[in-house]
Length: 554
Image (cartoon, rainbow, N blue to C red; front, side, top):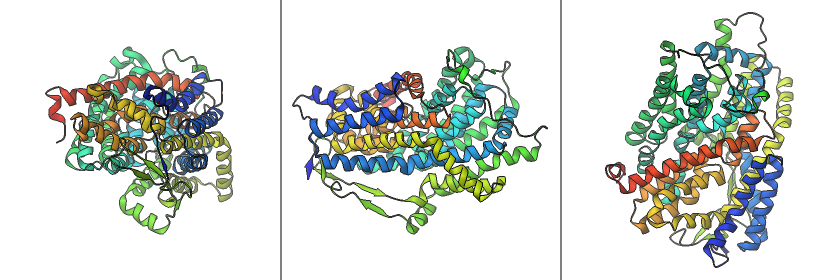
């Protein structure tokens, strides 16, 4: 048994700096744009092992096992999602159906700003609510790229849009993780998050269009921006507070899509925004043309309907796959779990991070059938048959897709290996304790702790599991509401989603803009910081200032 130590140098500041080295090193390497991202991830992983073993005293064998567990977790489920989403996308491109779908979106509106609201925010929110774990960015990034958006625009704007729905994503999985780690009631936690994020669900569509087209672009489409934000925010609040947190994102996304589509049937902007590149985007020349339409005549209504069938199949299968009943059945059929020898229950988290010494489980649940990626693969195969692919061509296309995304899969596994090692070595807790020492400013910095957790792990669920207990313990010591601060961990975390390394890799893969992860990171980093600060300020108002204090769930 090895007990974690959170101040190995006997100096909190030095220990905190040491704990921050791996993540800071990784982001710095990516930001330079001079090192391939999978190489950067592997270098940062080596640095993390060195810090864990030589600075924090973690036994080398345990460190290696934690890395192996993280690498496997990186491929299942996240890499598995990316591989199969890109497979489906490539099938639709090969048959020319993707270009026909683009035509149907253009018929709704040729305005690029409104396409962003429809695809990046509304459509992406649906996939976040249904499956999460990288699916929204993979799907929306591919679609926007196919519509002619520049690579930076497609990747960066998909990341910005994938924020507000994250806390309730994957049918409430982050709230489940938060409740499990904090010991607080999931309904109360969901209700509290539902009193924080709706404000930002209205703000994010404005922010999305501002990041793309500036204030001049925003002014021309304020009505649909409001429709988009409000039609998502109001259901999110009502469902999370008066029903349950499991359906808050996916139901709100459906209402948002229907409301925005109905509004655009009766309203279009006076001036159409046709540019698909970002303001000042020096990569606009890298814009990849939309896949060619493989029909010399105007697509018929039947062709337009068929072009959406693969994506409708995907939505339907993901919806079904995400229900508790189906997950239970699939996991009953096949869900072996593997304990990692030499690591499982041999690492102790100790106070003040937890109330009493708690062994860390190291189990890999291979719930292969219930993975979202498996649902996507099934959707792709069904769609492939529907589109007329032969079995031989499907197999060949799949191996071609593996070749295309191979470096991205390596990167994602390395990122998760780093995040997993960080957790077992206690580096995450050292960083968390630094935030927890902020006293009266803790509502602000505690919110940023959630942001940091997602930036490190790539998952709001993982951040909630890491810091849920710490948030409860610290808030009780400071006389704050544990419900407020645990929820703030999740709400602040969603703004870290756009800068975590694995999301950036997903975005670069989806847009086929390999090697430019640094450009994507530089674009979204300031956006992420600014939005996280705003969430932190809002939580601080809820903690101390009337009438915001009335919003706190008792």
